[in-house]
Amino acid sequence: MGVQAGVSIAIGYMPIALTFGLLAKTTVLTVGETFLMSLLVFAGASQYIALSLIAAGTGAFEIVLTTFIVNIRHFLMSASLNEKVETAPKFLKAIYAFGITDETFSVAAIKEGKLTTGFLFGLVTVSYGSWVVFSGVGHVIGSSLPATLQESMGIALYAMFVGLLVPSIKKHQKVLYLAALAGVLNFIFVIFMAKGWAIVAATLISSVVVELIVMKKGEQRG
Image (cartoon, rainbow, N blue to C red; front, side, top):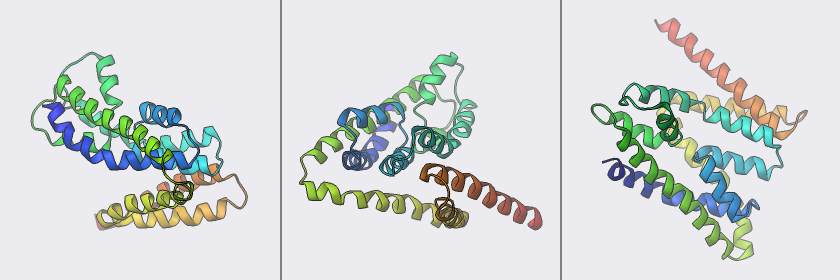
């Protein structure tokens, strides 16, 4: 059941992973580094952000901190699913918790009844395998493209961010305010601090400010 549920996610991951591999090639990552990033991180949005930070010459610590902030929601997702999972050793839960993404969480969360360890392992393994394999395939394909086309692929990185942002804006208006405020703050901060730290500071401050505003409006309505 888990494998069957994961097939649709695996198919959906294919074009995104291929694009990631192509962009990783233009960011001067080797095929091994690209494969290893997908193998150890397994987080689409964070990996794309990491590519943009690497391209900007950002330090390792800032990259790790930024991706941690982006993925902090996974703590909540894992805690939520833990309430639906059958009793299992903690080390098993730790293994399949690594494979929790927005997509695998959505599939697992809407499944009726208790989640078995076998279902989650099947769901995560198929999705994870697709992401890792096609990231490497994308890099290999990118290596065979003409040099001029490889260089132009850098534009696709920004297009991907727009593609990730627009659907979120349609669902939640606060995302628009968050993105706009983060952009303005980053533009200001980059004047007097390193690009990596400017992104981290802008992300943190804009997230806190927007959430406080949303909470304040909620209290006023209540």
